Image (cartoon, rainbow, N blue to C red; front, side, top):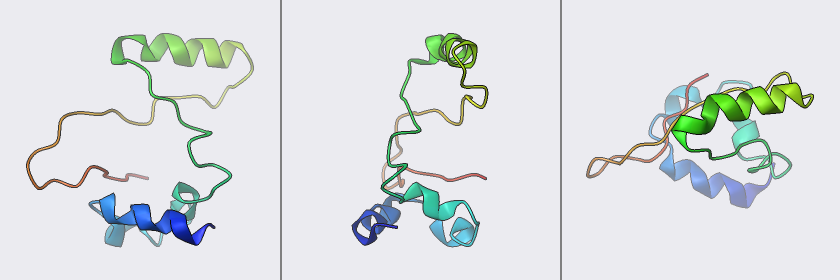
Length: 80
């Protein structure tokens, strides 16, 4: 795990609650940093997943969404 990547942890609202999860370190692994995620407009998400699965990526799926932040709110909430 890249130590510098851990600096992003300050943006995770529930880091203390999820940091012991075995998959948590993957959020900071330079080998997976962004390479496994794509931002797609909401109205195209299902189509994007269907195309990825059709092209040989059967584990593709929608894992989250974005919205506007409330004042003082941290930008990331992790759910396993």
